[in-house]
Image (cartoon, rainbow, N blue to C red; front, side, top):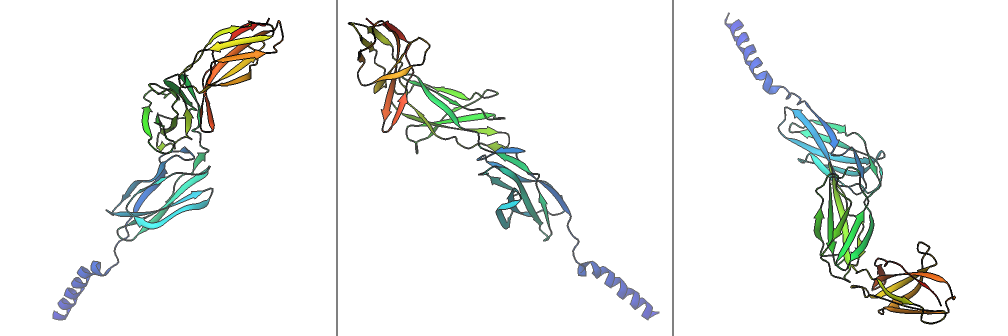
Length: 303
């Protein structure tokens, strides 16, 4: 009897110790991998994220790989505790992320995100044009789905950039009139934007010079086959372009470039002809010419 009781006691002790000798239970967890956008443009800044991580572990580590058109273009094999990665695509294609997640018991699981399409960059200036001696109009193309545009200005292409506008309308306008500028000074502009889940890149830099609009003050034919015309000085201009046509709405061609002055005399013009003239200012800075607006036309019949 004592031997039977001793055997039973030994068996109970072994059963008590069994869980300590067994391998730990495998931790089960699940997750998904998503991007903050379903469609992106080249140069946009978006994120890959691990979503809905559920399991018994209280601590996870993550390693990311990014694929374009089936080829791995960015590998981050070292695990860390950031469940997201920022990404900026540099070329169009089909992109996806592959993420390996490891829990605090050493178990791991790998999943891929849905594929997203990255299209060529769209954010490009259309033009910068002077509206007067102290104002410029900046216009750029619209980007689908944009919620905000941010416009920056500087007098130096490389430094000194400051934000001068962010849009508040819905949809935001793709233009801005910059006022209180200095006539004849060159201003540089660039724009970026926000879309849901993504931040857009800066556009190429564009430049403009505010100039006043001139007007033709006098146009006469003082003698046979001669024309004399004068125009008003335009603040911010370093010279003027005179254009001529044979009808008010005809094709105007440049007939004179005047540096500094405000008078032009034409000789040898065909007698009896009716001619139409416009003048616009320009500003020459280093090797670049910036143009102002044309004046209203004036006509003359030559003696």
